[in-house]
Image 1 (cartoon, rainbow, N blue to C red):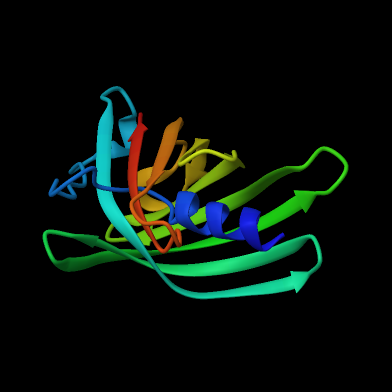
Image 2 (cartoon, rainbow, N blue to C red):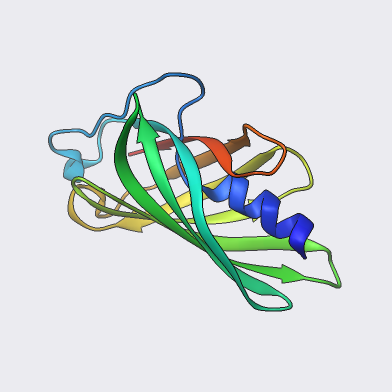
Length: 146
């Protein structure tokens, strides 16, 4: 479980920067006619196992050296299929963005944007997280949504 939790934690640190990118929020994303991209580094701050097959994680999301938001991840592990999945909430200026995640044994995690509040209300799109260190505590995340 710890192996998958670390991958989950690293991958989910929910929406990120693949280098030194910027974190931009649209002025009026509620129309959802334009594609928007959020990029940042998610840094794990706290994690906990709730049971043998579930846990949670809290992260700070950083862009250009500044905290631009926070994300939380809830994950479950299926020992029969040896797969992990979870939900993520990104809290940033403009509202909450919600998503689902499917974790893999590799350094990249994929997910879907499932909605949100404020400027993210009705949002749909994709989430990609890439581990930046072996322990999985720093994750580059990119969220593309409409």
